Image (cartoon, rainbow, N blue to C red; front, side):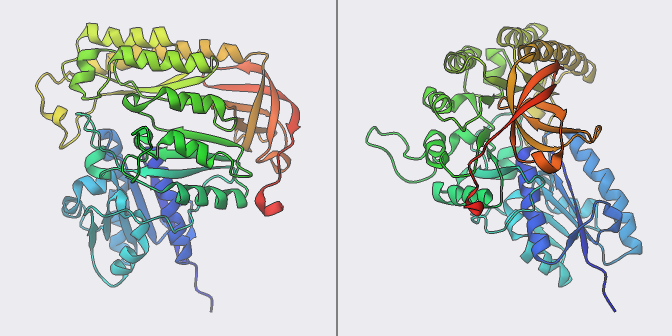
Length: 458
């Protein structure tokens, strides 16, 4: 008699760090003999990797959990796991709210999933939220893409932005060594990956916690040094990095990006507000003038660079004039994309208990106004691609039109064109852009660029 395979399902909320954590945890579950199930109702281990940046993401987790908690009453062998930032923030309070939960684990514990699940299978209800030294990644993530992969370079965040819960849920900054990062990139190259995104909650802080200083007295390990160190990994054709903090974004880093051919001309640098008083209240550590100088410097070195950002509207005490200062910054800079959000008070953050919280109506009105401006700008910025030849790294088939493939330009624009995914996946294709939309492009393929062989083919 054959036993049916044990299946698992992971639902991921939130940022790229969470997606990277989910891929690692999926890798651990597959090492343990579990098989992925698209449908959570066919899975015996269900894991929610949660985000606490916004209240609505948190509420969604509770509604998903409620459904599976009911199912557990009929299927006692179901294992329910909440990982990520909500788990870290709520800890044991989650068990009181949803007693059917088996395991609550903060983001720092992602690599310990196997031993934590073994404790659950021994009949324990487990909470793992204590701070730990992050263990070097030894698991092989189950990557969602076979072309582009995340590589964590620094965990945690030492900033203390007054609206943000990340430092308290993801812990202090811990950088991986350049050698470990390069080894992971070499391994990914052997597996045929062509693009790497180096990830950190505050990636420009990379290396500050590693020992060593140069003769000039600066940290020996910086993000700039790391880019030079990993740039020549054979088989990796493109390198990106995120997320940046304006306080630490240096001209030396910009110069490296301009010099190193594999580093894409795409920068994601959140500004959050265009008003200095609000930036101070947010404890961001820079002014809008400094932010503008960074963008000017990028455009001096790389005039065509794609620049994206994050902004918050409706922060406590934000006046109409301060909001208009944010709109003015967006108008002046002309971003390719701005991720916008209405301020959402998070438990345990200073701004959550301040007076002068704005009404939901004001926040919603400002969000609509900023989004309108962002989409107008994105449409204008897209025009520059019309008629141009862009290099597109093919990632997947277009789900809506199987005759087309999709990929990204170096500036991170999603681009569609006719072609066979079987032949083109992982290839870089020159595409003449024939149609522009605010956030994506369509074109005609001209030529597939020859790629050097990956190390596994040598």
